[in-house]
Image (cartoon, rainbow, N blue to C red; front, side, top):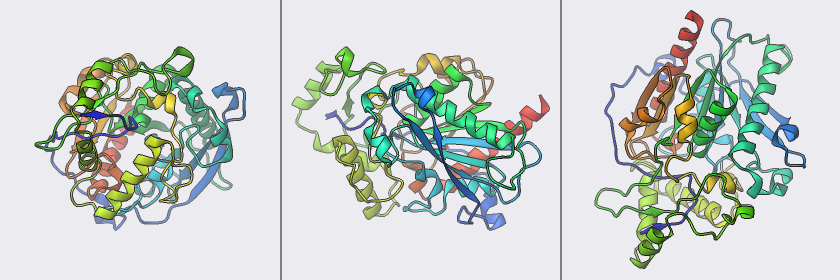
Amino acid sequence: MAWHASPTFGFAAELMPLPRPVNRANKRGEGGNRAMPTLEITIDVSDAARLGVAAHIAATVTLPEHAPVDHPIVCFARPSSSYTRAYYTHDLPGAGAGAQAAFHAARGWIFVALDTLGCDRSPEAEALDRERLDFATLAAAAHAAEQDILARLANGVLLAGYPPVIQPTVLGLGLALGGALAIYQQARHRSYHRLGVLGFSAVHTHPLAPPGGELVTVGWYPRDAGLETGWGEGAEPLNAEALAAAERSGRGGAAWAALAWGFHYDDVPREVVERDLRHYDAIAGGTAEHGDDGPWYARRTPERAARSTLTPGVVATEAAAITVPVLAAMGERDLVPDPAGEARAYRSASSMDLFVCPRMGHVHNMAGTRALLWERLDLFGQWCAAVRAAS
């Protein structure tokens, strides 16, 4: 069965049972719903993007109630190509509750959720040529925006009355395409002290079928394949013969059943799953510009970069070059066919951690176990800050 949808989501059936850490959110009575100080900013990245037109990245900064003094953590988080930064800052519908940004801010993090360049809802973003939004451009723009925010924090000018944040541990976080971009950015720009890759495989990101289902076939495109090189929309993928054979099987409808299985675990309400799939269909078909399903849904996607997300080893060289500690985290159903094999990709990393969150689909922040994933990220962040402080 062939699958031609946007290469940013998938499904896996691997589960590595891990001991459940103590949920400090429950002990503290802070499950991520508590209001935290937030700041909306827009950063000019025109020089870094080098598109010849104005380019800006929007970010939401969620601050802890009390400014961190010892070993501060600043986390920069990017969603997949189908979502906006609100994926992290809103209490999303689903089986669980709470917003990830508030969850981490309650534990002392400064959490910065950024839109991917060209994926926000502004008229300026709509005017950007999505065929020019390749890995290099998106990473350079994100790095510039993050460095701007770090400079404001260090100089105490991000928010009036908020004290300077000196020498924080900087954590990069990305979901799906956001994870691929974080890997690329770290290798090229050395943006982070530590890296969290969510729902993305540095070996081979691929959607798997549910139990008893048929394995889907997806298009493989070279990284940054663009119109000017003959690799734009409608171009033949590298595995064109396999796709043609899959299409001849006439079982394309099964892909959508597999999609629902991979996006969300069984406890997510049906209406939430259906709404998410409608948005996915609109993004894949280029008709999402006027949707109103929720502020966490993107209206457009960086097509040039997204096109190659499911190609084997799309950022393999960059992943191998990363030297900082890495946490690869994913749901029980996700884009990562072989979670235990992810360690091979990060051969230069000083530390590599793995977490497969039970009862979770690829859309982590709509899962009933979302707080369990956030708790694991919090433990990783605190450990990273402690190790860096001791170095």
